Image 1: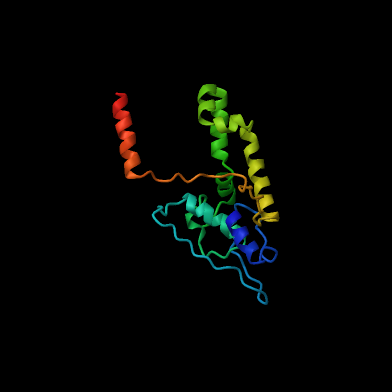
Image 2: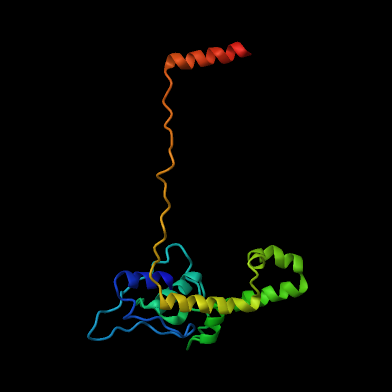
Length: 183
């Protein structure tokens, strides 16, 4: 989603094409008739397998929700039952509900394994129940302001790097002779 918002912001289209708020729903970006059209983007998945629920399709869903026009069908999304898309099941996958329930299971049953597998979450004091709120907050921030923030550049003018000069053949032979004399 962030990639799509930045692409639109770079061309001043981020205000015209807003992000979709319903995460699990299937909607393609529609262009207003009189105004500029959304970018039409085709996804090349490369060597990734085109299986149902693959991460490349979740990334495509995020880019499509950001406002890019990516022609696709919902048949590759988790929650597709052959006739329609179960939006809640797709949203659960995006917000890591299965991972959160596994985290809670490990936390209750095997504290040591929980700390081993989810040590990054433990270090940042992130509880399994708060992950969905973190993701929703991140999506809101991306939708509100997806433009790239310029970082402050570091000053390197005070540092000096020396370029060592090559030593001549005669100097090299003297060093070898001196080392051999030491032994």
